[in-house]
Length: 524
Image (spheres, rainbow, N blue to C red):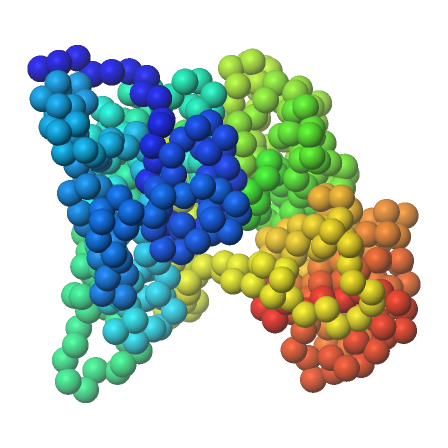
């Protein structure tokens, strides 16, 4: 058997994703590195819309997409390029004889089957979300990881971009990606099997489903629960790739509250494609920010701006970053008492600085980190199950501006940031932002006007000239008036109140722009 190559340069990539987050940025990085992009359907349309050169799969196969898109990539011209082991000369010769070019990268997120089931969709709609071509691509690439890197999560994009600068992916990196890919396929197939196995006897209530499966959780006792008199444990799903599977690199034993806060912090930063940091206290962000353009150390800059939102509350907080923690960020964190820091990775020098702090808990997210596709919450006598909250109205071109002069690009960018950041704040939620950073947050109040007062008070003088986001509509004009009196320059909110006209009139009278998204994001 021939020896496997270690580093494989990426020259040709196949992209077919249902989750479009970060797609354009990844596609641009690949194209800038001279990688040929081959893509399908809506993925190709998104890349072309961003001005990137794309070869349609149909051009490669000579066969059009057919059967409402059920058949696109199932073709020898695709799978031979994925499965050829170029460590074997005879495989390379056969590809050359067939006129087929190999792939060194596959990027594929599967159809949202689990999300469709959780939404209560009809059987026909659920069945259409059973991906066939996607798993075939992923399995082929993962099997041939000696030659092909396979990406199944947005969280893995940064690693691919880094590999472009390093001259290609290493065998160890491709093996890790393959393991995550097969794990994703296993989860996906189990979800499909459970859906088909649900009872279907005559007379069964339509909305009742039985979920079956062999779940062998690993149970780890914790010191105590939310309070010292409560017992607690962590149940880890062996097939999971979330916070529960994070590797603790340093620090004291994680507590129940540490896990709750760390999960909230990760949830907050993963809404952003840009380098982002969230500081969380009692499951609520007390600061969240993205890096400013052209920052020399983006993740360190994002942390500094997140901490500046409310440095008093940040003391004893939990920090999450969506990029590798750099030495610059670590040196800043080391000056602040921090319970937990969680990130996809840590520079060796950063880890050394943080590890000098005896009690800080350092968590590295697992490869292929994925947010849950289903959420559970216990109530007395049962369990509530829902599809996780995801943005479906994040494109500002779909928003409706109802007051004020058209907003400039900088203001619109701040409104988009505030809208994203507000989703991770407990309701009723009001978030004030300026230049990609939160400057005041009002959370968890029993009425929206109190949340407005809290956000404005915490922002202080920074409220003037900021933008404001509200996770749900203003039931009266009084909450919006608090923001207007503080000098906000623009507001984004869902709209939909029976008193929208009253709120719109108050904002219009102040000469402030207000945009309606049409989508609420309660977080209880």
